[in-house]
Image (tube, rainbow, N blue to C red; front, top):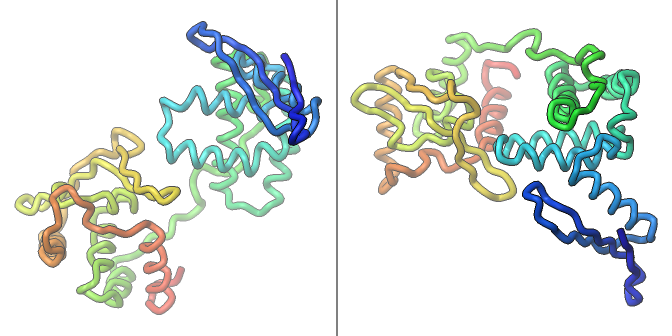
Length: 291
């Protein structure tokens, strides 16, 4: 290990050599450290991460975890997991060694997270992130004691009560939407098919069988960092063909006919999820269905 100081900037640079998983010798360098101690500390943690010794800090293991999962998880899933880990796990455990984190530490962490007033379902999602980290460390890197195994999970997998709309409530809602608006067709599809928002936004003309009154769900859409992303659904079971009422087929067909020159493989609705949610919220505020 070595660290050198840039005479012009006064900053320290750390550099080291290591072997990657293919056995190839690689060189790693990072600049901009305020002190030599910080540079050498980064070096030590980096070298630990290349071999994933369990005396490494949890913050370093997070990088190992996402490196290992890069080919398994979808980009959106990784982004969501990173956000929750960086927001709720790293502030407590970033500079604590994996082997030093005890069940008692996990309980204290849970109490601190619960005190923030999150919903039960969100608490369970946060819990799942730290559990996934330690499960991966145990299964792949032979961490002897998984502290999460001895502690009851916080939160609940499902909400206590789902807020379903009755047909009368939906009729009241949809009657307040302009029939000539794309949002009318959007909400009709969502209600009568039960598909997810992202699945609806990914629909193309090719996905609608106008003769047999069916919609094929084969993909999902989301937007992140100013990029439109279309990917496969989260599970194989999500790929499906849905029978739809004939009147819905006609509504979609009328909408498509108004979209002059729409390619068969172009998205039917060139908007993002936030626009749908905003329209829904506004309509509920002035309609008969309370939020």
